[in-house]
Image (tube, rainbow, N blue to C red):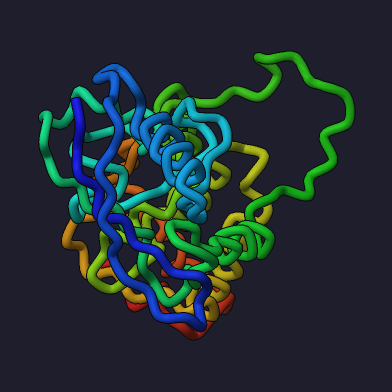
Amino acid sequence: MKVTLKVWRQKNANSPGALKTYQTPELNENMSFLEMLDVVNEDIAMKGEEPIAFDHDCREGICGTCSCVINGKPHGPHKGIATCQTYMRSFKDGDTLVVEPFRAKAFPLIKDLVVDRKAFDRIQHAGGFISVRTGAAPDANSIPVPKENSDLAMDAAQCIGCGACVAACKNASAMLFVAAKVSHLGLLPQGQPERYKRVKAMVTQMDEEGFGSCTVTGSCEAVCPKEISLDFIARMNRDYGVSLLKGESKKMAGGGAG
């Protein structure tokens, strides 16, 4: 099969960018989307042109670095998978695919399809940790945890921080990401001592990074490769409300989820 690619090319954040058209070599339909880009880059390099810059690492849907917008949808046409898990059999021979970077003020473009997502790192540094001294590894059953809580914590912990939620949101909100990071610690006993300080610190950092407010359109949940639920945003807002009552902050969480 062959497809036509229209790929966003931009040397850096200070240079103008534009979509450039490429005709792919013959492709195997069982190639992943990133393998297809590898093949296209080999062809481009053979012609003496500069290859397309794109992020990748594990190529197993774990690291979250493979973020591309394919035909207007972060990570591509399917639900619950990352760009690296999208295969060329998802498209038809002769299709035209428009490939762009994630676009958000808080994700400044580095080059072509690569954006800087250090804003997420700074949010996690602000409060995504626990300072409880745990000592040696305790027995698994020494701290009882309700199964509902452990299941929810594991659901939230699946977030890979790819930024698809931001790219899909009309406001470039990071509420789903922050809610997942707040919730997976806040649901477990070890995370309780800093629960309300954590939510205040992470939301404050989120606002400082320039992410927009949440208006609950649900686009974030729809494109999340790990299908993180909007329920976590509601949970985070409840915790933020408690932090207000405790005097932790005078500012509403990211404009609120409503």
